[in-house]
Structure formats: C-alpha cells, structure tokens
Image (tube, rainbow, N blue to C red; front, side, top):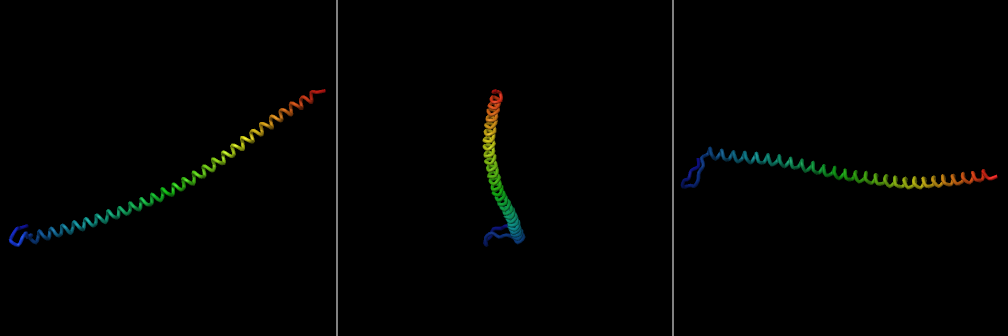
Amino acid sequence: MIEQNERGITINKALAWTMLVSVAGLIWWGGGTLASLQGAADRLTSALTETREMIVAERANSAQLEARVRALENSATRQDTRFDALSLSINELKQQARETNALLRELAQRP
C-alpha cells in the first residue's frame, strides 16, 4: 500500500518487493530479448554479406561467359567471311571451267 505521511510517500514492504522483482524481471526479459534480436541481426548481416559475395561472383562468371561468347561470335564471323571468300573462289573456278569447256568444244568442232 502507498501512503502519504509527514515523511513523504511510503510503500509497504510487500508492494516494494513486488515492484522490485517486477522491474528486475522486466529488465532481465528485455535484456534477453535484446540479445536475441542482436543475434538475429548478426545472422541476417552475415547472410546478406554472403549473398552479396555470391552476386559479385556470379557477375564475374557472367562477364567471363559473355567474353567467351563474344570471342566465339567473332570467330564465327571470321569463318563466315572465309567461307564466303571460298564460295566466291569456287564460283570463279566453275565459271573458268565452263569457259574452258566451251573453248574445248569449239576447238573440237573445228576441222
């Protein structure tokens, strides 16, 4: 019980002990909860750091793959150019063979 008298406000012992134990319990519970939250925050920070590292590694792998693909595309383009040149050469040889055959036929038909 709380009373007002000439010495000021007084609290009986049972109420004082109840209040003291309640405050101590609240502080104990709050400290435990805070420690738990801090541990969870640390685990989340660690997970985020790992995720960032994985993203950086994946970006590096992606850049390497992109460089390889570009090199293969450039190589394919060079091969296409070579095949086009080869095709033109073959067509020229065919044309020359036709002209040679035509000349040989003319010569064979002459008496």
